[in-house]
Length: 404
Image 1: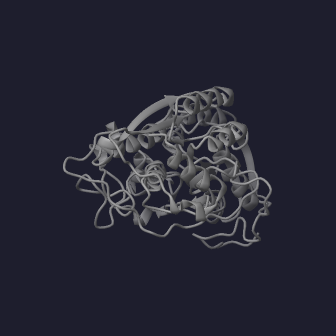
Image 2: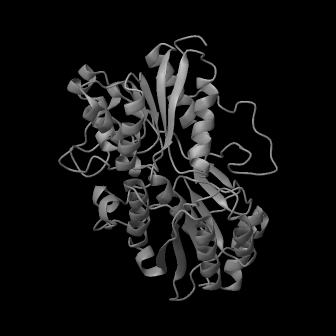
Image 3: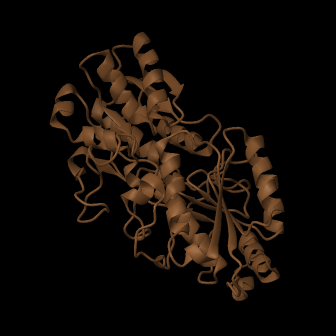
């Protein structure tokens, strides 16, 4: 469906010229929109769920009749994703919804695609090319808020591990920068081990076990995705758990609320990256392509989940309702990322959609709320020639209970 009016609309969005969107792209024949789902890193449950949500939405009416979705996994080498983007552009892509492996390495290719009328939507991870949309919770402050939560739990003193993500990725960089902004304020906090866990439970378990061999007296762990692996490593090493912060795995969220785990020493908060960002990005893209939305902000913020132990509520059905925020252990694996569903933004999908990409029978695509939250500029994360706000690293979810 790559016609001249589509190229005008996509290019207008790419350069922020909202006035040009008076001539949006609208399906006028039976030809489908060609949409690419481009993954880079794909080695964990988070990436699978994010991809499955997009697949389920693309198979939900009316998109099942108007969208041709093609998935491409390129791995952790930026050059491989650059080559993949080049092929998508040459193949006549109308849109590319993507988890980018680098915030800067892909920029030149993205710019070429924008100039040829391709609409780019990045989810979770971001790029600094200003013609691409970034849909991400990065600017919502995971790093600094979770770090402060851990500092509070430890009373401002203790030996800690940093369990990071994928080297060179904007998500890992932003998280760690925010966390270290807090930890560096507390002389009593000693980072005794730092390792990359690739947002994977098994890798996190292995790397945490290595760190425990050198530092068995660790007092706390600051973890990104894969955090349940850190819990398992601690249990393997003995019967002592420690305060932890982590993301949204069902295993970790259920453990936080488990009295037996609490008795062993586990405390903390479940926050972090929602796979639902992929579905939100896809729906925003499709609303632009079908002429239903004009979107001026290029950086859109997804809210940061924040679930302390006392706020964990187990769901009884297949969707999040009545305040529930995690599925039971007999319903999903421990690695299942709980923040994959969003009843406001993604009412069309359920737990089966996240597990295997299945559309919900009888569901139809629902319009998104008209308003979006514009993300703050963060140099090197979602923009290049820009100034960081004075409120960068400002705490939004928690207050310090100990003084630096």
